[in-house]
Length: 193
Image 1 (tube, one colour):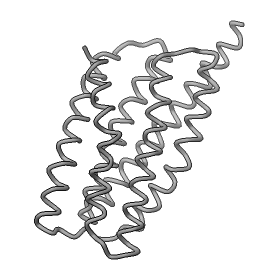
Image 2 (cartoon, helix red, strand yellow):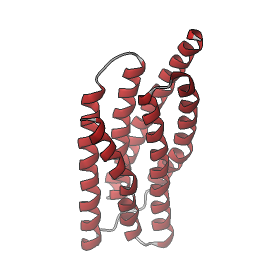
Image 3 (tube, one colour):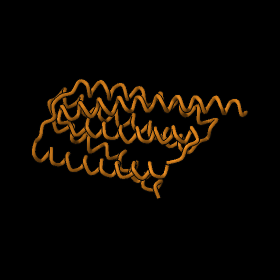
C-alpha cells in the first residue's frame, strides 16, 4: 500500500510540474497575444493562467511536503479579485468606447490547445488522487477543469469575433469568464481565512 502511495506521489509531482510548465506557456502566450491584439478576453485568460500557475506551485510544494499554502491562497484571492475588476472595468470601457480588439491566431491556438490539455491533465490528476486523497490536489483538479471551460469560452469568443467581425463579442466572452472567476475568487478568499 505504501509503495503504491509513493508511486502516486511521484506521478502527482510530475503532473504538477507539467501543469506548471503548461500554465507558464499559456500565460506568456495569452498575455502576449492579448496585449498585442488589445484583447481584454485574451489578457484575462492569460492573467488567470498566472493565478493557475501560482496554484500549481502551491500544490507541488504540498506534494513535496512543504508548507506555504495559506500565503499563496491569499495572494491568489487578491489576484483573482483584481482580475474580476479588470474584466468588468476594461470590458465595459471597451464596449462604451468601441475599442475594437484585433484578431489573434495565436490566441485561438493557445486556447484551443488548453481546451484539450486541461481535461487530460485533470483526468490524470484524478487517477493519482484516488490513491493520495489530497484536498490540495482535488482543488487543483477543479481549477484545471475550470481552466478548460475558460479556454472554451475564450476560444468561442475569439472565433466568433474573427468569423463575423463582431468585435464586441470578445468583451461579452470576457464578461462570461466571470462565471468561473468569481466563484474561484470566493473560494480562494474562504481558503485564505
